[in-house]
Length: 192
Image (cartoon, rainbow, N blue to C red; front, side, top):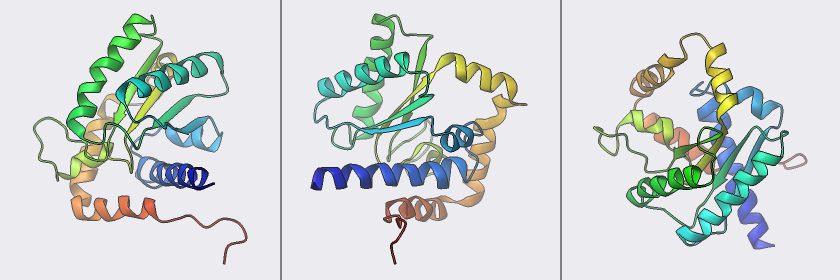
């Protein structure tokens, strides 16, 4: 029972991050429709090793490939790759997996980590908050859906620049506080 509650709390935190930061700050203009239409799969990996996480990733890629009702998957992995350097190095393995399995160009994996740091920035810089969720995440995306969304959005290439400007305007302290609200347990219907 405790494991189920932890999984639920982890998913709730990440869902809150998507609602508050990703959609609320319009960091990804494509996310709202998918969340509203329940086409985002939130799943928690129990992996404690990189090898186990790679197996879970392969399973999720297969599920995404076989189930058109799922548009995108957030594979949350709270027990492995907690350090950003290790996480960042693992992304090379992920890219290799996509190439080996012939899924490069079919799926794309976006990276999100609580300690995310863009090259040329300091760890506490505000712009890093565009990619800082409550837990490490591998975000599985359909390449064709992403291309379609980008083609239909005016000035899609300016989204990262706009996000960085917004993060700097808000400031790291405000963003850190906003991210912390994602860990507060959500009230359920009937809660007082």
